[in-house]
Length: 291
Length: 327
Image 1: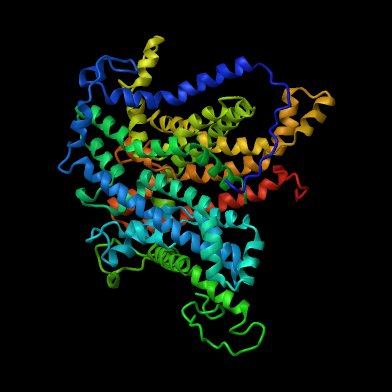
Image 2: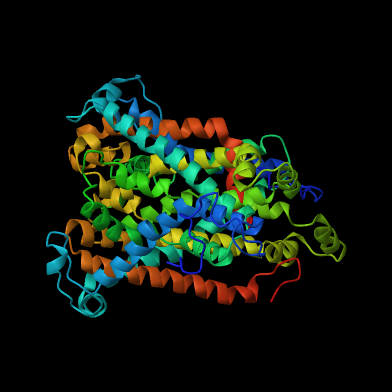
């Protein structure tokens, strides 16, 4: 990301025993990846093999768990995926838009009480969502939005109102790195605050927007607590909430399908990871260190 | 709201008093900028008021009532401090949840940070392939609090899960870890530690900031690797350690998904995984004691604020900033 200034690596120290280090790292990688590989392996094992074959990979590749899991409930898993995708994508849009607007004001504009509002924003950064969930539930229920015609409103409204302070903060940090001279030049050309936002900040904030979009998608896709609280109808369930249905069915026969759906549910995040690995890691670098 | 002193964002017509020549008056650049700022801020302000501040005040009020969502607001009974009294004196499961959460955070957070720092030190060299390792270690953190991962974890530590299969290879008889009250929470701790990737990446960034000259100077003074680590790396890294410690502790207190999945939303076996937030969820949304749950939420908020404050007040004794702003 842009705010990360490249600094020389501490690489001039004697490197010790590189082979030993590599060996240790490979062992740790094996431990870290084992559960994930085991998950994928189990998802293509037959029921019999799940019980008897303790190896990571199946002796016979059995894709049946995927079809069985897909239609394990009254509602197809496809529906849950569509629901999750809808919630996640709209969250991306909402977070990107609303946080960018707020961040522009905090980073570039002078206004009364700026210091106070900024402190309040930072304060909400550490506010646990569990504290707000009970009153928010009551609020949205009173407004008739829980289980209503569009059950995702309680999940989405906060996202369109820049309540994800982390992203506001991230964008403020980013915008502080955009040279002020650009604003001055635009101002001389007659641009006001709106023009500067539209023609300078918006185009230049692309990297911050992309980082926000990626994290916002992944976090919403993985989020469970809010979706568990606000979604009550089976056909409205998102993927994480639907996955817990498998736990309810106590029979062991559902392990294969459950694993298959678990693998599928992680697939979008995994694909994001593969595509944006560099950006993700640098994203938490910069957001983590600065400030 | 502070609209009495702040420019009103709704009053932003282009003609609003543009004839005033006064420096801070309407029509000046400064004034226009102030108005524009509040326009840009308005979604955030509405969110702050509507989704954060007012709900919080509502929850503070409800914490003194016996609200259960089924009875209308007009019939809600004010019970004074009864909820707080019950919490602190008459609800053993509340204290149990506090103990479970503290145990979890006290053990899992330091081990997770140690793992993160250890691996970061191993990766803090420039060589081909380091990026691949970094990414692979980060992957579990990214999948983080997902239900799918918790499901896998629970099954891996089942009676006939992968972990026991591995143990049997070396001749150790396993046990049904997740169903054993003595081991269920430990299983969740291992899951948390396994996700050391996020703090690791932050440690790596911090390690890159340590000036090489310091190591050279220490080395000239005859300091070995361990002394270099103790006297150069740790102090230089202390702001990053501090940041990770605060962040991971707060995260640790909020653990919910894995505990929910492991116990199917009950906190079992025998309440061994009854994390604070899970207890709050059960109280508020299963038992519908929303007044009581609000009281729990407020104590939680104050506890987190207090712990953060303690971190910050003790931090100045061991966190060193290289720009000389130690105190």
